[in-house]
Amino acid sequence: MKTQAGAQEDGAMSQTEVEGMNELRGKVAIVTGGASGIGRAAVELFASEAAVVIAADIRDEAGQQLADEIGARGGTCTYIHTDVSSESEMAAVTEFALAQFGRLDVMFNNAGIEGEQAPIADATLENWERVIDVNLKSVFLGSKYAVKAMLRTGSGSIVNNASVAGLVGFEGISPYCASKGGIIQLTRAVALEYAKHGIRANCLCPGVIETPMIERFTGGDSAARAGLAGMEPMGRLGQPSEVAELALFLASDRSSFITGAIVPVDGGLVAR
Image (cartoon, rainbow, N blue to C red; front, side, top):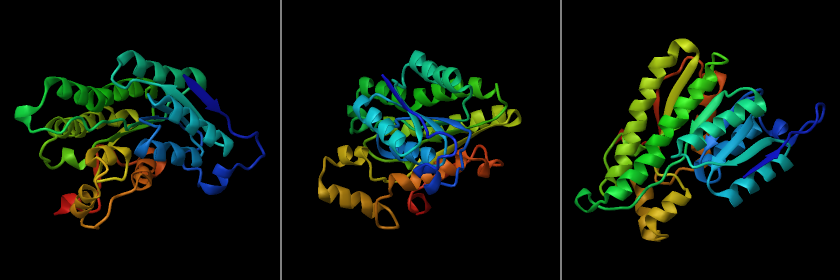
């Protein structure tokens, strides 16, 4: 499934051009998990900064609606149904970018799941494999095919979304912690492999961000939500837009001398 909305004709000032600074003008970006949470915020922000954005997700209704909304505002967004744990589908979304737009400049490997909560003695292999597939395997595949595309132009930025759970441990979510730690090390390796090829790779480590994942994690319990907010030195949950702003910086040419960086966006959580 895909829906594409095009920008206005030349000479017409779109709303996105008025709102943004055109940080990504001329760039083509893929955002996995782009239909909700941090991914959605990044898709909206990248489009407002004049990027051509491909939102890859399995939430078809939400993804199509997002593409339509961005198109109505004068931006350019295509939604493509993508299972990020499937090599063929990750290859296909990258090939779509090349076939439709002739290049790929930004890959934001954002998709992820929290999995089941259980101490490791009670954890299932099925949950481990699912979390690793969606969270870590997807970043491997996204990076692999993004690099292949970016080598054609000799430039590009890969931004991976890990977590503070890749930097410090949390009880009851060992597969999630392992997957996020793996993303951090994968990012460093890719950054070194392609530093001389004009391709950068950096990693975000969000703290407790107000997304649907947090709602699932807390089961909607207000006390649990308050407890998570209390973990943050700033005393509040982060917003998806606050993470998207850092993703934009790392995607843009303003971060041209930054690669292999692991950057917390966590309200000071890992500074404790």
